[in-house]
Image (cartoon, rainbow, N blue to C red):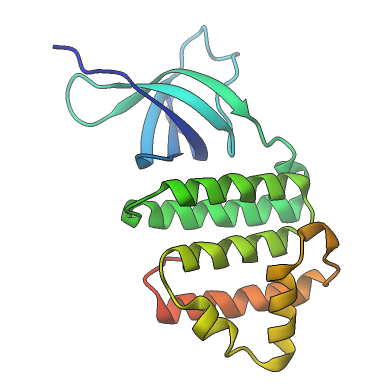
Length: 205
């Protein structure tokens, strides 16, 4: 009996040539979490569009006859974040966020809230308004979603000069923030250190 097609939404977290015949995609699905699939390169689709990094798509995945491989059978682009690569800082922090997801998704029991958070984050990176703050807010919310006492331990124990800055970043809309990027980056470094020391969340090096 043939295996059933899997139809789902997904965000493209990573894309690379697997060999001369395939493109490999790392996907974030709201129900399944992290999935990997292959798309076969043919003469017909060499010139056709494939899903790109950060795309939100609806796709059909076909299981291999043997093993656990999945193949991309069909897809429809729901939203393309083509503006992100046009801004270096937005692209850098969007990639940082997708790396965080790739490292941690296998351990997330209920991925839907994180999927919704990622949709909002990509929209913020697309607008390229204070991408450093967008990354900090997203990482903060993810850590809180995972049940860690980030507000009760990290935030309130910040030095006074950083505490006021952190509250401003976390509570103010991105388009109203005027903090220099290096100030926010200092906060990001501080948060990365706390996460490394006090949680099981993995961060890219």
